[in-house]
Amino acid sequence: MPEIRIDPFPSAAELDTLWSAAWGTPAPRDFTSILSRSLTHVGAYHDNQLIGFVNVAWDGGIHAFILDTSVHPDMRRQGIATRLIREATRVARERGAEWLHVDFEPHLTRFYRACGFRPTKAGLIKLV
Image (cartoon, rainbow, N blue to C red; front, side):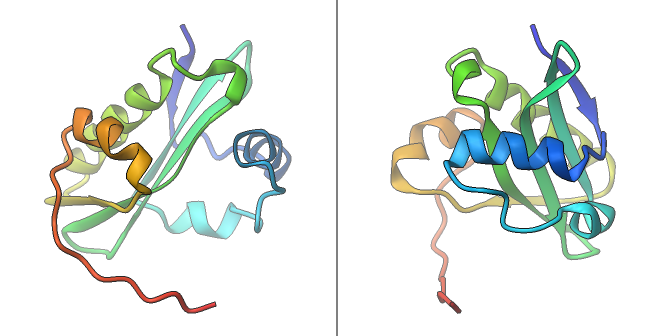
């Protein structure tokens, strides 16, 4: 079972390797400055290698946001993403968040519902 670490601050190379495997593209940016402003981020490690990750951004107040949930394709369907989300939820609550938001594509509805998220009406503008 992978080790779950709170705020591990993985290197850019570690995140790029995971991102490339999980999303099929290089990481879009260096996450260093992003993670330093996050409420928390959670990593899953197997044999000291980053195999799962989730970031929790926040507004500095009571709202937090799940971003970048990623699990290496070779490690999927083992409950790792669920553990990451549950741990991120726990830490966000402990650090004062009262609401945890997530946006996701329709095929992930069942997963996020199982993690405790309920549907809401929301809006979205694509800026780029």
